[in-house]
Image 1 (cartoon, rainbow, N blue to C red):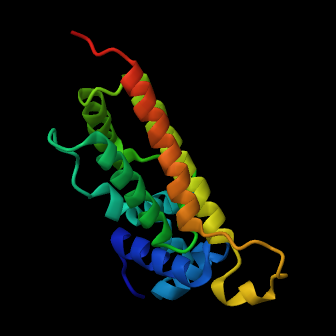
Image 2 (cartoon, helix red, strand yellow):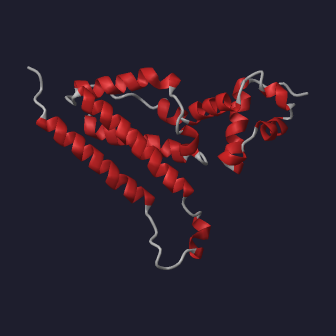
Image 3 (cartoon, rainbow, N blue to C red):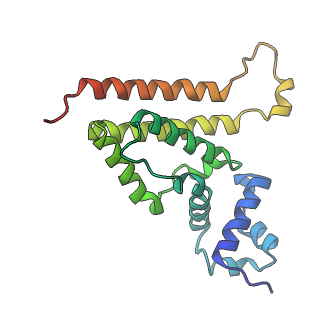
Length: 194
């Protein structure tokens, strides 16, 4: 029997996700892929939910390891870059938004705190910074959910001619601009403490 470690299980599970999609990922299928008996997976993950959480955390690595903002960064440019990075990361995996939705970023809490501190130090009111980060995150997950659920590119010819095609990237950028414009307006209208 093959021995596997936790990292190998997560790596293979993400590979399986990319091949078959979230609905078809099962511990039975994963065990077969790894060449082990299904109960051996429970040595590393007690439940499928625990495995999915580890997969979500690993899938987010490109975003959660990106450089943090520095005091010299323009907060608006950073906000756009951070949100776009999140979107790219979700799109990097099949069903990436579904995998991420509802997961708790346990390893990312310090980074989130530092991002919030950066926005507040840049003059964004704390409550507005919190709500903007939350709104941008949820908007991004929702946008990617819709994009990943959309008709696959090869199947778009089957759609009736009167059904509008959505340019997902343009729609995302327009929504992101609205969030940033609102935050910029609120920040400009809030007096800075002396």
